[in-house]
Image 1: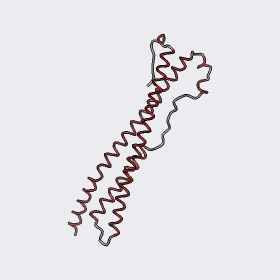
Image 2: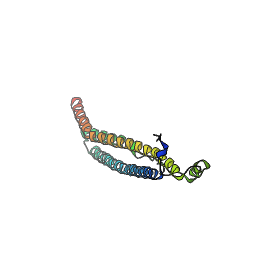
Image 3: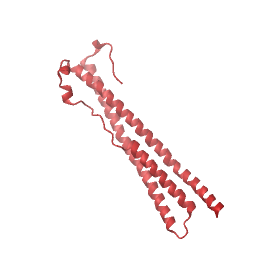
Image 4: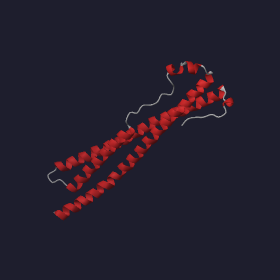
Length: 178
């Protein structure tokens, strides 16, 4: 989103300073939110690891017994597999490293003859307007990450239901074939 001004006579150094301060504060907030979302993604990934380890360990224990109870082993394997898939989706959608646009501009881009032809408050306004691109980028990222975390949590919450259905189907199939 580009900021456009129709009445340039109203632009003053004080107003530019206010815009610059607000834009910087907002960008900092959005970037802090990004960090919080990353922590939430890590917490969700820990849940996923717990499901994978618990399901796999118990399935292995059941398979190692003299008479494996397949109606229990199958749902545990399904639960571990579903959790693993959700872990990959979460990792790809929320924990991948994505570049963060810097808060400021490189001095080499600011120290140009074109830029120096303007008053300082005009340069500061141009920089404040550039912050909008960074804010939009960070907001878009946060929205995508939040969606992935929520969808992953819903999917993980459904794993016990799916595992119970697999257990019932397996038990019924074993009874029908046995």
